[in-house]
Image (cartoon, helix red, strand yellow):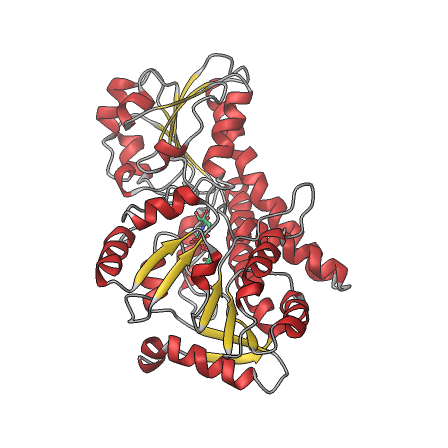
Length: 421
Ligand code: UDX
Protein backbone atom coordinates (compact mmCIF):
# COMPACT_ATOMS: atom_id res chain seq x y z
CA UNK A 1 0.00 0.00 0.00
CA UNK A 2 2.86 2.37 0.80
CA UNK A 3 4.46 1.50 -2.53
CA UNK A 4 1.20 2.55 -4.20
CA UNK A 5 1.44 5.98 -2.54
CA UNK A 6 -0.68 5.53 0.58
CA UNK A 7 0.43 6.43 4.10
CA UNK A 8 0.40 3.21 6.09
CA UNK A 9 0.84 2.17 9.71
CA UNK A 10 1.21 -1.57 10.35
CA UNK A 11 -0.02 -2.64 13.78
CA UNK A 12 0.66 -5.96 15.48
CA UNK A 13 0.61 -7.20 19.06
CA UNK A 14 3.84 -9.12 18.38
CA UNK A 15 6.52 -6.58 19.27
CA UNK A 16 9.27 -8.84 17.94
CA UNK A 17 7.74 -8.66 14.47
CA UNK A 18 7.08 -4.93 14.73
CA UNK A 19 10.70 -4.24 15.74
CA UNK A 20 12.01 -6.41 12.95
CA UNK A 21 9.78 -4.82 10.29
CA UNK A 22 10.57 -1.30 11.51
CA UNK A 23 14.27 -2.16 11.15
CA UNK A 24 13.68 -3.29 7.56
CA UNK A 25 14.08 -6.99 8.35
CA UNK A 26 11.44 -9.40 7.10
CA UNK A 27 10.39 -11.83 9.84
CA UNK A 28 9.71 -14.50 7.16
CA UNK A 29 11.07 -15.62 3.81
CA UNK A 30 9.16 -14.03 0.93
CA UNK A 31 10.79 -13.20 -2.42
CA UNK A 32 10.99 -9.45 -3.13
CA UNK A 33 9.49 -8.49 0.21
CA UNK A 34 12.60 -7.17 1.96
CA UNK A 35 13.38 -4.78 -0.92
CA UNK A 36 9.79 -3.54 -0.96
CA UNK A 37 9.77 -3.13 2.83
CA UNK A 38 13.01 -1.14 2.84
CA UNK A 39 12.06 1.15 -0.05
CA UNK A 40 8.68 1.81 1.56
CA UNK A 41 10.27 2.61 4.92
CA UNK A 42 12.68 4.96 3.15
CA UNK A 43 9.77 6.72 1.41
CA UNK A 44 8.49 7.79 4.84
CA UNK A 45 5.01 6.46 4.03
CA UNK A 46 5.33 3.26 6.07
CA UNK A 47 5.62 2.88 9.84
CA UNK A 48 5.03 0.07 12.32
CA UNK A 49 3.66 0.13 15.84
CA UNK A 50 2.40 -2.14 18.59
CA UNK A 51 0.19 0.65 19.89
CA UNK A 52 -3.33 0.67 18.47
CA UNK A 53 -3.59 4.42 19.16
CA UNK A 54 -1.29 4.85 16.16
CA UNK A 55 -4.08 3.48 13.97
CA UNK A 56 -6.28 6.45 14.84
CA UNK A 57 -6.74 9.04 12.12
CA UNK A 58 -6.39 6.71 9.15
CA UNK A 59 -9.27 6.59 6.65
CA UNK A 60 -9.17 2.83 6.09
CA UNK A 61 -8.28 0.06 8.56
CA UNK A 62 -7.38 -3.30 7.07
CA UNK A 63 -8.07 -6.23 9.37
CA UNK A 64 -5.51 -8.89 8.39
CA UNK A 65 -5.21 -11.15 11.43
CA UNK A 66 -5.08 -14.93 11.16
CA UNK A 67 -8.07 -17.25 11.55
CA UNK A 68 -6.37 -20.58 12.29
CA UNK A 69 -8.15 -23.85 12.92
CA UNK A 70 -9.68 -23.82 16.41
CA UNK A 71 -8.07 -26.23 18.89
CA UNK A 72 -9.95 -29.55 18.90
CA UNK A 73 -12.39 -28.48 16.16
CA UNK A 74 -12.43 -28.15 12.38
CA UNK A 75 -13.95 -24.65 12.64
CA UNK A 76 -12.06 -21.35 12.34
CA UNK A 77 -10.83 -19.66 15.50
CA UNK A 78 -12.06 -16.06 15.38
CA UNK A 79 -10.46 -14.88 18.58
CA UNK A 80 -7.87 -12.70 16.82
CA UNK A 81 -10.53 -11.04 14.67
CA UNK A 82 -12.57 -10.16 17.73
CA UNK A 83 -9.51 -9.03 19.68
CA UNK A 84 -8.36 -6.75 16.86
CA UNK A 85 -11.81 -5.21 16.33
CA UNK A 86 -12.18 -4.81 20.10
CA UNK A 87 -8.84 -3.01 20.36
CA UNK A 88 -9.57 -0.80 17.35
CA UNK A 89 -13.13 0.20 18.28
CA UNK A 90 -12.18 2.92 20.82
CA UNK A 91 -10.36 4.74 18.01
CA UNK A 92 -13.31 4.59 15.63
CA UNK A 93 -15.86 6.63 17.57
CA UNK A 94 -15.05 10.00 15.98
CA UNK A 95 -17.23 11.97 13.55
CA UNK A 96 -15.15 11.25 10.43
CA UNK A 97 -16.30 8.47 8.10
CA UNK A 98 -13.95 5.52 8.43
CA UNK A 99 -13.78 2.17 6.66
CA UNK A 100 -12.82 -1.16 8.21
CA UNK A 101 -11.86 -3.59 5.45
CA UNK A 102 -11.87 -7.23 6.53
CA UNK A 103 -9.16 -9.30 4.81
CA UNK A 104 -9.16 -12.26 7.18
CA UNK A 105 -10.76 -15.50 5.96
CA UNK A 106 -13.88 -15.96 8.08
CA UNK A 107 -16.91 -18.27 8.20
CA UNK A 108 -19.92 -16.92 6.34
CA UNK A 109 -22.00 -14.71 8.64
CA UNK A 110 -19.05 -13.22 10.51
CA UNK A 111 -18.98 -9.84 8.71
CA UNK A 112 -22.66 -9.13 9.26
CA UNK A 113 -22.29 -9.96 12.97
CA UNK A 114 -19.23 -7.68 13.22
CA UNK A 115 -21.08 -4.84 11.47
CA UNK A 116 -23.93 -5.21 13.97
CA UNK A 117 -21.42 -5.03 16.83
CA UNK A 118 -19.71 -1.93 15.44
CA UNK A 119 -22.87 0.06 14.61
CA UNK A 120 -23.94 1.27 18.09
CA UNK A 121 -20.50 2.51 19.18
CA UNK A 122 -19.08 3.54 15.82
CA UNK A 123 -21.91 4.88 13.65
CA UNK A 124 -19.51 6.49 11.18
CA UNK A 125 -17.68 3.26 10.43
CA UNK A 126 -18.44 1.24 7.31
CA UNK A 127 -17.38 -2.40 7.24
CA UNK A 128 -16.42 -3.89 3.87
CA UNK A 129 -15.38 -7.54 3.48
CA UNK A 130 -12.46 -7.60 1.06
CA UNK A 131 -10.93 -11.11 0.92
CA UNK A 132 -7.25 -11.63 0.28
CA UNK A 133 -6.09 -14.05 -2.42
CA UNK A 134 -2.29 -13.71 -2.31
CA UNK A 135 -0.12 -16.79 -2.52
CA UNK A 136 2.95 -17.21 -0.36
CA UNK A 137 6.05 -17.04 -2.52
CA UNK A 138 4.23 -14.59 -4.84
CA UNK A 139 2.89 -12.24 -2.17
CA UNK A 140 4.46 -9.06 -3.55
CA UNK A 141 3.31 -9.66 -7.12
CA UNK A 142 -0.18 -10.78 -6.05
CA UNK A 143 -0.58 -7.68 -3.88
CA UNK A 144 0.63 -5.14 -6.42
CA UNK A 145 -1.14 -6.87 -9.34
CA UNK A 146 -4.10 -8.83 -7.91
CA UNK A 147 -6.10 -10.99 -10.33
CA UNK A 148 -9.40 -9.82 -8.84
CA UNK A 149 -10.77 -7.54 -6.15
CA UNK A 150 -13.91 -8.45 -4.22
CA UNK A 151 -15.94 -6.10 -2.00
CA UNK A 152 -18.59 -7.56 0.28
CA UNK A 153 -20.85 -4.64 1.17
CA UNK A 154 -23.43 -4.18 3.93
CA UNK A 155 -26.98 -2.95 3.36
CA UNK A 156 -26.76 0.50 4.94
CA UNK A 157 -26.53 3.87 3.15
CA UNK A 158 -22.83 4.05 3.90
CA UNK A 159 -22.00 0.90 1.89
CA UNK A 160 -21.37 2.95 -1.27
CA UNK A 161 -18.97 5.22 0.64
CA UNK A 162 -17.06 2.13 1.78
CA UNK A 163 -16.73 0.87 -1.78
CA UNK A 164 -15.64 4.30 -3.00
CA UNK A 165 -12.95 4.50 -0.30
CA UNK A 166 -11.58 1.11 -1.35
CA UNK A 167 -11.69 2.19 -5.00
CA UNK A 168 -9.30 4.99 -4.01
CA UNK A 169 -7.06 2.50 -2.15
CA UNK A 170 -6.99 0.14 -5.18
CA UNK A 171 -6.94 2.93 -7.80
CA UNK A 172 -3.73 1.63 -9.38
CA UNK A 173 -4.90 -1.98 -9.83
CA UNK A 174 -8.34 -0.85 -11.01
CA UNK A 175 -6.77 1.48 -13.58
CA UNK A 176 -4.85 -1.53 -14.92
CA UNK A 177 -8.15 -3.34 -15.57
CA UNK A 178 -8.18 -5.67 -12.54
CA UNK A 179 -11.73 -7.09 -12.39
CA UNK A 180 -13.76 -5.96 -9.37
CA UNK A 181 -16.81 -7.74 -8.00
CA UNK A 182 -19.15 -5.90 -5.63
CA UNK A 183 -21.44 -8.18 -3.71
CA UNK A 184 -22.88 -8.74 -0.23
CA UNK A 185 -20.92 -9.75 2.88
CA UNK A 186 -21.94 -13.39 2.71
CA UNK A 187 -20.91 -13.91 -0.89
CA UNK A 188 -17.55 -12.20 -0.36
CA UNK A 189 -16.84 -14.45 2.62
CA UNK A 190 -17.82 -17.54 0.64
CA UNK A 191 -15.75 -16.54 -2.41
CA UNK A 192 -12.57 -16.96 -0.40
CA UNK A 193 -13.28 -20.34 1.17
CA UNK A 194 -14.78 -21.63 -2.09
CA UNK A 195 -11.67 -20.60 -4.02
CA UNK A 196 -9.31 -22.33 -1.61
CA UNK A 197 -11.52 -25.41 -1.32
CA UNK A 198 -11.74 -25.71 -5.10
CA UNK A 199 -7.95 -25.57 -5.37
CA UNK A 200 -7.74 -28.25 -2.69
CA UNK A 201 -10.32 -30.32 -4.59
CA UNK A 202 -8.25 -30.19 -7.76
CA UNK A 203 -5.16 -31.38 -5.90
CA UNK A 204 -6.98 -34.22 -4.13
CA UNK A 205 -8.66 -35.22 -7.39
CA UNK A 206 -5.33 -35.66 -9.12
CA UNK A 207 -3.87 -37.38 -6.06
CA UNK A 208 -6.81 -39.79 -6.02
CA UNK A 209 -6.23 -40.46 -9.72
CA UNK A 210 -2.52 -40.96 -8.94
CA UNK A 211 -3.51 -43.97 -6.80
CA UNK A 212 -5.37 -45.48 -9.72
CA UNK A 213 -2.44 -44.74 -12.03
CA UNK A 214 -0.09 -46.43 -9.60
CA UNK A 215 -2.28 -49.55 -9.36
CA UNK A 216 -2.97 -49.68 -13.10
CA UNK A 217 0.54 -48.91 -14.29
CA UNK A 218 -0.35 -45.51 -15.76
CA UNK A 219 1.47 -42.18 -15.42
CA UNK A 220 -0.37 -39.40 -13.60
CA UNK A 221 2.03 -36.67 -14.79
CA UNK A 222 1.23 -37.39 -18.47
CA UNK A 223 -2.45 -37.71 -17.59
CA UNK A 224 -2.47 -34.31 -15.81
CA UNK A 225 -0.77 -32.68 -18.78
CA UNK A 226 -3.29 -34.16 -21.16
CA UNK A 227 -6.43 -33.25 -19.20
CA UNK A 228 -5.02 -29.80 -18.37
CA UNK A 229 -4.89 -28.88 -22.05
CA UNK A 230 -8.68 -28.73 -21.94
CA UNK A 231 -9.07 -25.14 -20.83
CA UNK A 232 -12.31 -25.97 -19.02
CA UNK A 233 -10.10 -28.02 -16.68
CA UNK A 234 -6.89 -25.98 -16.84
CA UNK A 235 -3.39 -27.21 -16.16
CA UNK A 236 -2.79 -25.51 -12.81
CA UNK A 237 -3.16 -27.26 -9.44
CA UNK A 238 -2.98 -30.70 -11.03
CA UNK A 239 0.49 -31.51 -9.71
CA UNK A 240 0.18 -34.78 -7.83
CA UNK A 241 2.37 -35.51 -4.86
CA UNK A 242 2.32 -35.47 -1.07
CA UNK A 243 -0.58 -33.03 -1.05
CA UNK A 244 -1.44 -29.54 0.04
CA UNK A 245 -0.49 -27.85 3.29
CA UNK A 246 0.21 -24.36 4.58
CA UNK A 247 -1.70 -21.86 6.64
CA UNK A 248 -4.68 -21.61 4.27
CA UNK A 249 -5.92 -24.56 2.20
CA UNK A 250 -6.19 -27.18 4.98
CA UNK A 251 -7.82 -24.96 7.58
CA UNK A 252 -10.10 -23.17 5.11
CA UNK A 253 -11.30 -26.52 3.78
CA UNK A 254 -12.09 -27.74 7.29
CA UNK A 255 -13.73 -24.49 8.37
CA UNK A 256 -15.88 -24.49 5.22
CA UNK A 257 -16.92 -28.08 5.86
CA UNK A 258 -17.84 -27.21 9.47
CA UNK A 259 -19.88 -24.19 8.35
CA UNK A 260 -21.54 -26.16 5.52
CA UNK A 261 -22.63 -28.76 8.09
CA UNK A 262 -24.05 -26.03 10.33
CA UNK A 263 -26.00 -24.65 7.37
CA UNK A 264 -27.35 -28.07 6.36
CA UNK A 265 -25.23 -28.51 3.20
CA UNK A 266 -24.15 -32.02 4.11
CA UNK A 267 -23.27 -33.01 0.55
CA UNK A 268 -20.66 -30.27 0.27
CA UNK A 269 -19.35 -31.03 3.76
CA UNK A 270 -18.89 -34.70 2.79
CA UNK A 271 -17.07 -33.73 -0.40
CA UNK A 272 -14.72 -31.37 1.46
CA UNK A 273 -14.04 -33.98 4.15
CA UNK A 274 -13.13 -36.49 1.45
CA UNK A 275 -10.74 -33.94 -0.11
CA UNK A 276 -9.08 -33.64 3.30
CA UNK A 277 -8.90 -37.43 3.76
CA UNK A 278 -7.31 -38.02 0.34
CA UNK A 279 -4.83 -35.25 1.08
CA UNK A 280 -3.75 -36.73 4.41
CA UNK A 281 -3.54 -40.23 2.92
CA UNK A 282 -0.79 -39.07 0.55
CA UNK A 283 1.51 -38.70 3.54
CA UNK A 284 0.93 -42.31 4.60
CA UNK A 285 1.56 -43.41 1.01
CA UNK A 286 5.06 -41.91 1.10
CA UNK A 287 5.82 -43.65 4.38
CA UNK A 288 4.69 -46.97 2.85
CA UNK A 289 7.04 -46.39 -0.11
CA UNK A 290 9.89 -46.04 2.37
CA UNK A 291 9.03 -49.21 4.28
CA UNK A 292 8.51 -51.06 1.01
CA UNK A 293 11.98 -50.00 -0.08
CA UNK A 294 14.05 -50.38 3.09
CA UNK A 295 11.94 -52.84 5.09
CA UNK A 296 9.26 -52.45 7.75
CA UNK A 297 11.62 -51.85 10.65
CA UNK A 298 12.79 -48.25 10.42
CA UNK A 299 14.54 -48.22 13.81
CA UNK A 300 17.81 -46.35 13.37
CA UNK A 301 17.53 -46.27 9.56
CA UNK A 302 19.16 -43.07 8.26
CA UNK A 303 16.83 -41.21 5.89
CA UNK A 304 17.61 -37.95 4.08
CA UNK A 305 14.65 -35.59 3.61
CA UNK A 306 14.97 -32.68 1.18
CA UNK A 307 12.38 -30.00 1.87
CA UNK A 308 10.41 -29.01 4.96
CA UNK A 309 8.36 -25.99 3.87
CA UNK A 310 4.80 -26.62 2.66
CA UNK A 311 5.91 -25.40 -0.78
CA UNK A 312 9.00 -23.75 -2.30
CA UNK A 313 9.89 -20.05 -1.93
CA UNK A 314 8.61 -19.86 1.62
CA UNK A 315 9.84 -20.82 5.09
CA UNK A 316 6.29 -21.58 6.20
CA UNK A 317 6.01 -25.00 7.84
CA UNK A 318 2.40 -24.71 8.99
CA UNK A 319 0.62 -27.98 8.21
CA UNK A 320 3.53 -28.90 5.96
CA UNK A 321 3.12 -32.33 4.33
CA UNK A 322 6.94 -32.58 4.09
CA UNK A 323 7.38 -32.10 7.81
CA UNK A 324 4.49 -34.45 8.58
CA UNK A 325 6.19 -37.21 6.56
CA UNK A 326 9.54 -36.55 8.25
CA UNK A 327 7.86 -36.71 11.65
CA UNK A 328 5.98 -39.92 10.77
CA UNK A 329 9.27 -41.57 9.75
CA UNK A 330 10.98 -40.37 12.94
CA UNK A 331 8.06 -41.69 14.99
CA UNK A 332 8.72 -45.11 13.49
CA UNK A 333 12.31 -44.89 14.68
CA UNK A 334 14.09 -43.62 11.55
CA UNK A 335 17.05 -41.28 11.95
CA UNK A 336 15.79 -38.45 9.74
CA UNK A 337 18.09 -35.71 8.52
CA UNK A 338 16.17 -32.86 6.93
CA UNK A 339 17.37 -29.94 4.82
CA UNK A 340 15.38 -26.97 3.56
CA UNK A 341 16.96 -23.90 1.92
CA UNK A 342 14.70 -21.44 3.79
CA UNK A 343 12.76 -23.27 6.49
CA UNK A 344 15.84 -24.81 8.15
CA UNK A 345 16.17 -21.93 10.58
CA UNK A 346 12.56 -22.21 11.78
CA UNK A 347 12.49 -25.99 12.20
CA UNK A 348 12.22 -27.28 15.77
CA UNK A 349 15.62 -28.55 16.90
CA UNK A 350 14.30 -30.77 19.69
CA UNK A 351 12.13 -33.11 17.61
CA UNK A 352 13.13 -36.69 18.54
CA UNK A 353 14.59 -38.57 15.58
CA UNK A 354 14.97 -35.47 13.39
CA UNK A 355 18.22 -33.61 12.81
CA UNK A 356 18.22 -30.35 10.88
CA UNK A 357 20.97 -30.38 8.23
CA UNK A 358 22.47 -27.31 6.59
CA UNK A 359 23.04 -28.74 3.12
CA UNK A 360 21.78 -31.44 0.78
CA UNK A 361 25.04 -33.31 1.24
CA UNK A 362 24.83 -33.47 5.01
CA UNK A 363 21.13 -34.49 4.86
CA UNK A 364 21.74 -37.44 2.55
CA UNK A 365 25.10 -38.68 3.86
CA UNK A 366 24.83 -42.43 4.65
CA UNK A 367 21.07 -42.36 4.01
CA UNK A 368 19.33 -45.57 2.98
CA UNK A 369 16.59 -43.56 1.29
CA UNK A 370 16.35 -39.96 0.03
CA UNK A 371 13.00 -38.18 -0.12
CA UNK A 372 12.31 -34.98 -2.07
CA UNK A 373 9.29 -33.49 -0.31
CA UNK A 374 9.37 -29.81 -1.33
CA UNK A 375 10.19 -28.99 -4.95
CA UNK A 376 12.81 -26.28 -4.36
CA UNK A 377 14.71 -25.33 -7.55
CA UNK A 378 17.91 -26.38 -5.77
CA UNK A 379 16.79 -30.03 -5.72
CA UNK A 380 15.69 -30.45 -9.34
CA UNK A 381 19.17 -30.48 -10.95
CA UNK A 382 20.84 -32.59 -8.23
CA UNK A 383 23.28 -35.04 -9.79
CA UNK A 384 22.18 -38.63 -9.01
CA UNK A 385 25.72 -39.93 -9.50
CA UNK A 386 27.20 -37.44 -7.02
CA UNK A 387 24.50 -38.23 -4.49
CA UNK A 388 25.03 -41.97 -4.88
CA UNK A 389 28.61 -41.46 -3.64
CA UNK A 390 27.24 -40.11 -0.36
CA UNK A 391 24.35 -42.45 0.42
CA UNK A 392 24.36 -46.09 1.44
CA UNK A 393 21.03 -46.89 -0.27
CA UNK A 394 19.77 -46.03 -3.77
CA UNK A 395 16.10 -45.37 -3.05
CA UNK A 396 14.86 -41.95 -4.18
CA UNK A 397 11.26 -40.99 -3.44
CA UNK A 398 10.01 -38.03 -5.43
CA UNK A 399 7.12 -36.73 -3.34
CA UNK A 400 6.50 -33.77 -5.62
CA UNK A 401 7.05 -35.15 -9.11
CA UNK A 402 10.01 -32.78 -9.37
CA UNK A 403 12.73 -35.08 -10.67
CA UNK A 404 13.40 -36.71 -14.03
CA UNK A 405 12.78 -40.45 -13.36
CA UNK A 406 14.95 -41.61 -16.31
CA UNK A 407 17.94 -39.60 -15.12
CA UNK A 408 17.81 -41.19 -11.66
CA UNK A 409 17.13 -44.71 -12.91
CA UNK A 410 19.98 -44.45 -15.44
CA UNK A 411 22.29 -43.60 -12.53
CA UNK A 412 21.27 -46.79 -10.74
CA UNK A 413 18.63 -45.41 -8.39
CA UNK A 414 15.31 -47.06 -7.50
CA UNK A 415 13.09 -44.08 -8.37
CA UNK A 416 9.62 -44.03 -6.79
CA UNK A 417 6.98 -41.41 -7.47
CA UNK A 418 3.34 -41.16 -6.46
CA UNK A 419 1.60 -42.39 -9.58
CA UNK A 420 4.44 -41.34 -11.85
CA UNK A 421 6.60 -43.80 -13.76
C1 UDX B 1 -3.38 -20.43 -1.08
C2 UDX B 1 -4.17 -19.85 -2.27
O1 UDX B 1 -3.56 -20.28 -3.49
C3 UDX B 1 -4.22 -18.34 -2.19
O2 UDX B 1 -5.01 -17.80 -3.25
C4 UDX B 1 -4.80 -17.93 -0.83
O3 UDX B 1 -4.82 -16.52 -0.70
C5 UDX B 1 -4.00 -18.55 0.29
O4 UDX B 1 -3.95 -19.97 0.14
P1 UDX B 1 -0.79 -20.66 -0.48
O5 UDX B 1 -1.22 -21.20 0.85
O6 UDX B 1 0.32 -19.67 -0.53
O7 UDX B 1 -2.03 -19.98 -1.22
O8 UDX B 1 -0.37 -21.94 -1.33
P2 UDX B 1 -0.74 -22.58 -2.76
O9 UDX B 1 0.19 -22.08 -3.79
O10 UDX B 1 -2.19 -22.48 -3.04
O11 UDX B 1 -0.35 -24.10 -2.47
C6 UDX B 1 -1.01 -24.81 -1.42
C7 UDX B 1 -0.49 -26.20 -1.31
O12 UDX B 1 -0.92 -26.98 -2.42
C8 UDX B 1 1.03 -26.35 -1.25
O13 UDX B 1 1.36 -27.29 -0.24
C9 UDX B 1 1.40 -26.90 -2.62
O14 UDX B 1 2.56 -27.69 -2.59
C10 UDX B 1 0.17 -27.73 -2.93
N1 UDX B 1 -0.05 -27.95 -4.37
C11 UDX B 1 -0.29 -26.90 -5.19
C12 UDX B 1 -0.06 -29.24 -4.87
O15 UDX B 1 0.14 -30.23 -4.13
N2 UDX B 1 -0.30 -29.43 -6.21
C13 UDX B 1 -0.54 -28.40 -7.06
O16 UDX B 1 -0.77 -28.65 -8.26
C14 UDX B 1 -0.53 -27.09 -6.54
